[in-house]
Length: 265
Image (tube, rainbow, N blue to C red; front, side, top):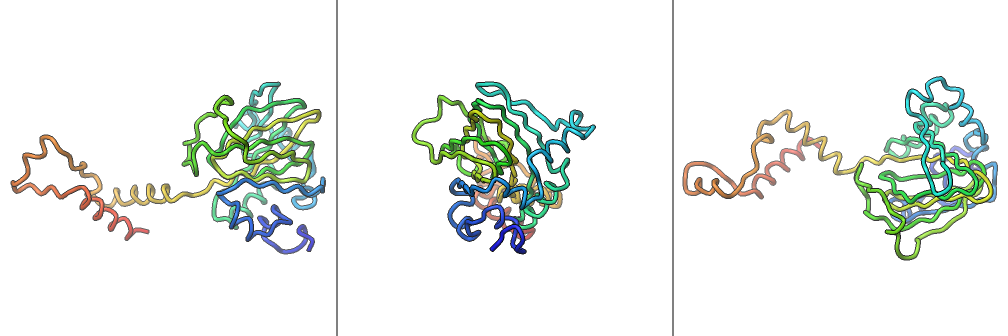
């Protein structure tokens, strides 16, 4: 099967030759994954994207500075340049993100990262699932266990190199055409050697159960004044015991609130 011409899901083509079922069962939100293909033009054939196309589109955009598209990130040796919101600047990448989001039922964003030779990046973790597509050059990645499993949005704290202990779960050298998948929360330490690197990061911003409950509760609170009542307490409220004031236990409040909330879902 030629993964660039068959009408297969984009996620399957990103992961080729690994079967999609294997990825979903063993890696998605569980374990990092490296796919080394030894096909430098794989992304060019799949996405129709040459090494310099996305970069040229950004540099040609008059809004690149006013919208905060690019950010310099310091490492131990020089800087890498991050071009955030790449899907807003490249029609090819926008189509890729839209298709992948439709398949996975989660929003997908993209960024372009350019790193100089002999550069050592600082450890970091993401609150999203990350597919790294190596477009040109090569980059070394060391992946450590997550500091927090399945973090919520904004719940990933800065990672200190001195805090990295134990054996990494994965070490890999990505070349053009290769892919790295990192579940949210895993700590990533990137580096380049004698050549620069250019990769695209596809960020899957998963919708979490916690966010669904939070949104449903906000809707419920706007429709039912009972969600605005104060929580039951102790202390002076104990004087109400034996009186005509109705103070049901907290468990009863929660049970009733959950029943009303489930009716909205």
